[in-house]
Length: 227
Image 1 (cartoon, rainbow, N blue to C red):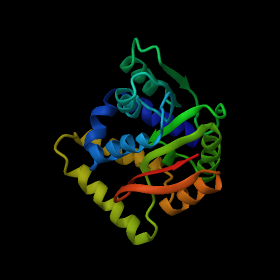
Image 2: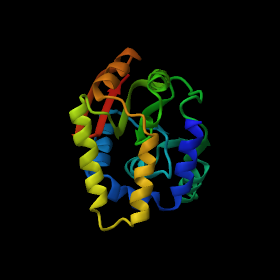
Image 3: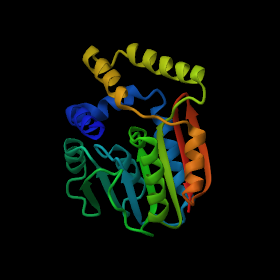
Image 4: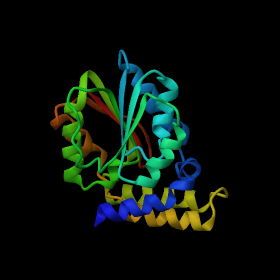
C-alpha cells in the first residue's frame, strides 16, 4: 500500500516536479554539485545507475559531466519516468526501467557509479539495508555509491529543528503556489527517513568502504561509500 501511495503521489506531480525541486530544496546547488564532484573519485566513469531517478534531474547533471557514459534510470513512477524519457529523447546511451527499485534485481559488478537523489528515504529501513547490499554487489571494483537524500535527526530535538526549518523555507517561498506547498507537505507524510549514522553503518555492513557524509544542510545530506 505504501508503494502504491508513493507512486500515486509522484505520478500526480511529475509535470512540475523539476521546477518545484529547486524551490523545495534550500541548498539545491550544493546538494547536487557535491554529489557530482564526488564522482571524480572514480577513475573512469562508463556505466551509471540512477536509483529512483524520477524525471531524470540527477541523471541530467551526470550526463552533462559524463556525456559518453551509459546511464540507466530506474523509477517506480511511470509518469515521472516518461518525463525523463522526454528529457533524454534521442540519447542512445540512456536507458529506462519502470520498476520498484526496492525489489528489482541489479546486475552484479556492472556500474562505476550508483547515484540516487531524494529517493531512498521512501523505503522502510529494512529495504534500505537490502538495497545497499544490492548496490554493493552492483558496483564495479573501485566504484562509488553517492546518495543525495534526506535523513532523520539523530535526536527528537534535531528532527524538530530539521522539520521546522524546511517547512518555514517552503511556506515563505514566493515561487511556490499554495497548492504546491500543500502538495509538498502531503508528500512528506510518506517519507520513512532514517538517521545518517545508521545508514553509514548499513553501507559498511553491506561490504562498502569509507562510508562518510560529505555535505549536510539540516536534514539534506550527501553521503557516499566505495567498493
